[in-house]
Structures are given as C-alpha cells and as structure tokens.
Figure 1: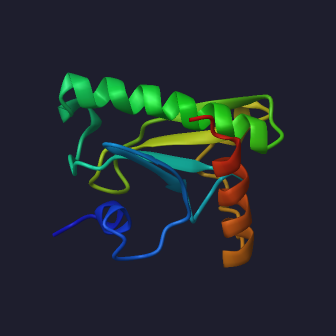
Figure 2: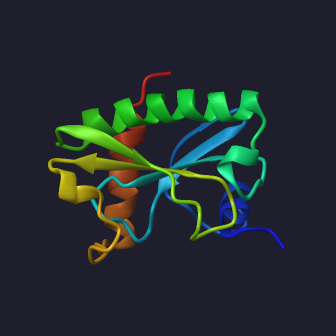
Length: 132
C-alpha cells in the first residue's frame, strides 16, 4: 500500500508543496514543531533512508539544501535544523526545521496548529524564496 507521502506525491491527497524537482518533493509538515517545518522526500517510495541508492540519497541532500535556504529566507530563524528519524512514515524523508535554539528540534514538543489558509500562506512564502 502506498505511503501517505506517495499519495501526496501522486496528488491523490492534498499537500502544502513548497518545491518539486525531478525525483524530489518538499512539503509542509501538517503537524509541525516549528512554523515552516518542511518534509523533503524522494518520489521513489523507499522505507529507510539508508536503503536509497547513492545517487538518490545525494540528490535528496542537495535538494534539501536548496529548500532549507528558501525556508531560512522566508521564516525568521537562526538556522535550519535537519533530522532524519524514519519511524513515523514508511517513506524516506528529511525534516527541515527552523531553529532559534537547540530545543526547537525536540519532537516531543506539542505540535503547532495552523489553518489551511495559514499553511497555504507559509508554503507560498517558502516557495517564493527558493531559488531555481
């Protein structure tokens, strides 16, 4: 069965997409720990990030960098943190999280809630800040 991320990739369910390029897609986490928390995925459904072939893994990191630089321009923060947990959805993905302190990337924190309109606005701000 397709993962929820594959359903977003295939446009079967809505996603707040901030960037798409060839083999990769970036979209907002709908249960974010920070405003602008973005997930970056390869379009190819592979469960574990270290099972990706080298070309896909390196491309994922390069695409993640491009997205992170856009997030940093759009969302006031000191840095963009990167995390790979890999337990919550069986599809390799990278979390990009705007940071102002070490504690901002604690996944035990209560999740933020945004309306669909707010998520659309955040996605558009990030998308507009990503350089092609």
